[in-house]
Length: 306
Image (cartoon, rainbow, N blue to C red; front, top):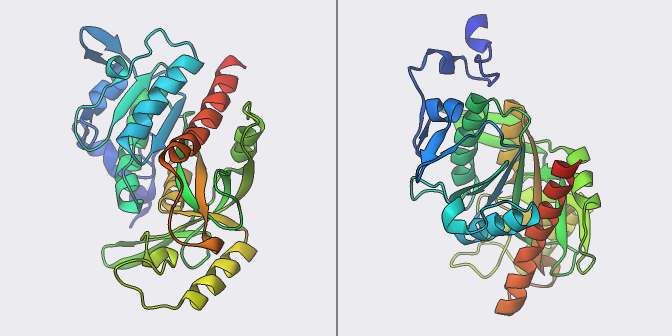
């Protein structure tokens, strides 16, 4: 690739081919680059993406609907019902706009969140919202922490326990640094206003699979022993890993390349050193799931009021 092709686009994104597009349709979100730049209309009301300061992402549509209403109350937004805040145009991702906050689902795993990240960072860049912060909220499996602990990621590891993200492009293996913003992680932890739950800073391991990839012995297929599982989990813990999920290395790598700060805030539903299955009651599950929402809402409120 020559020097011209290595250059960034006019948006500041590391893709010079964006310069030659005659309009860019963000297919999975359902918005165009023109709407990102100039705004859009819903139910006769004009909206803009230019004021976006935070993009909060989570796996499920229900979680992001809940967060939309939580953050609307927290920042005293004039509209507080999810139906009125809903700006989704496709059935791929739930999508809400609450003033300077976007609440959007990313599905499950690296492929799904990567699609969203490509399109959401382009949308933000077209809108000129280059200072926006991206935060993933969700659930995870803990390692050496009790259920209900909220982990704010300060390092991201892949399944080889390396701070890298791997993908295959044109038949070649690409390995990119997966580095997360530790200052942002500490700021999120320090914003905690609810003392009823514990937060920790720690490493997060990202895997390609919920069962074998995370060393479980309760999937439909298992070709390792329980002893091998425990040895690996202890080794991961000794490297600083305190929880496991399936998105963080892709997020940290892609955000680093596109110039956006990002964070991951996930509650542990179990301690994997004590078992593989999530056995908490439904009410406790709901309560635990609200903890990352509460913490991130508190952080956003503090940033917007400062």
